Length: 427
Image 1 (tube, rainbow, N blue to C red):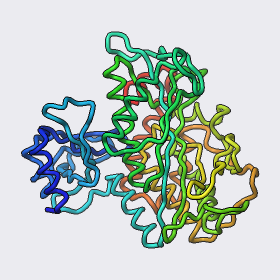
Image 2: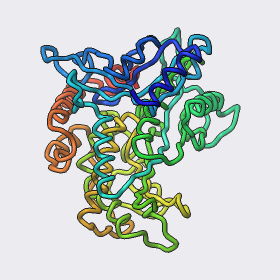
Image 3: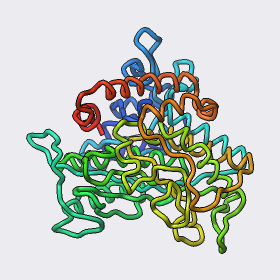
Image 4: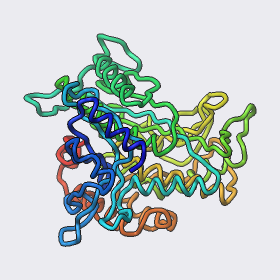
C-alpha cells in the first residue's frame, strides 16, 4: 500500500469519515458509485471492491463473467462538503480491473490515461480548461418540470438571475474539494448558467467535469430544483455547450504562446489535426439525438473552420496573452463522456503534430458537421482513426447502444416527447 493510501486511511479514522464513494462512469459518461464503509477502505486499496459489470450500461453482457473491481485513485480523494459534517462522506475516482488485476478495456477513464501516456512518450502534455453550461428548472412534488428557475439573460444580476446562490454553493463546494473554478455567471437562456474551470492536465479536467455534474445536481436538488445538462432542453432557447480550451505543452512550454500573429508549427498542426478528425469524432462529442438540435442553432457551429475570436467558428483563438494563449473548441456539449471526448481530441491533435499538418486558412469553411446522430454514427463507424484509438469491443458496444437510440427516434411519432422521457430525467 502506498504512503498516500496510508495517509488517507489515517485521515478517515481521525475525521469521522464513515462512507467512501468509489466513483466510476459507464461507457456513456453516466456517473456510478459503490459506497463502502470506512473499515473496507484498506481492502479497496489492496484488492479492489467488486461490482456487477453486467448491470452497467456498455460494460458487459449478462452471461459473461461480470465481476469487475474498483480500485480507488488516491490522488482524487475529496470529502463531499454538502454532506453532513458528522459521519462524513468521501469520494475517490477509480480504475476498473479484472480479478487478475488487468485493466478493464471498457474503463473510459483508463482509456484517457493511456492517451496521456502516449502524449508523454512524444514529449507532450495537453492542458484543458472547460466552460460548462446547464439549466436550472423548478420541480413539482419532487418531479422535474420544464419551467426555468428564472428569466435572466447573459451576465444578469438578481432579481433576473435567481441562480446566483446555486452557482455560489457549487463553486464553494468545488473549492472545498480541491477544485478551482475560475468564474461563473448567468447565461443567455432562462435559467441557464455557466461555470468555468482553470486550466489543468487533461485527466484532471475530465474528472472535474464529472465532479461538476454531481455537485450541481446535488446542490440544485437540496434547493428544490433540477439541474439539466441536456444540450437543448428548451426548443426555442439557447442550447448548453461544453467549450473546451486546449493548449499543448512541450518541455513545459505552451506551444500556443506567441507575441505575433502565428503560433508555433506544432501548435498549428495540433489544431489542424483536430479540424481533420472532428467530423469523425462528433458522435462522441455530441452523443445524443438532442445534441443535433443545438449544433447550427446560431450559437453552436455547424461546419469545420477556425478564426481568431469569432464565436461562430468551430475553433476560435481567444484574445489572450502568455500562458493563457490556446485554442477553443466550441462544438462539444455537456452530455458527452469527457474521458472518451478528450481521448479522441488529444489523439486527433497529436496525429496532426506527427504528420506536420499545415493549418488551413483562417475563416475558410470546410466540411459540414453531422446533422443527426445517425449521420455522426455512420461517419464514426467508417473512421480508421476512431478505430485506431478506441478498443474495438468498446466501439461495438457504443455503436450498438447508440443505434438503438437513433432507431427509436426515427420511429417515434413525437421525437421531442421521447427526448424528454429518455434523456431529461437523467441528464
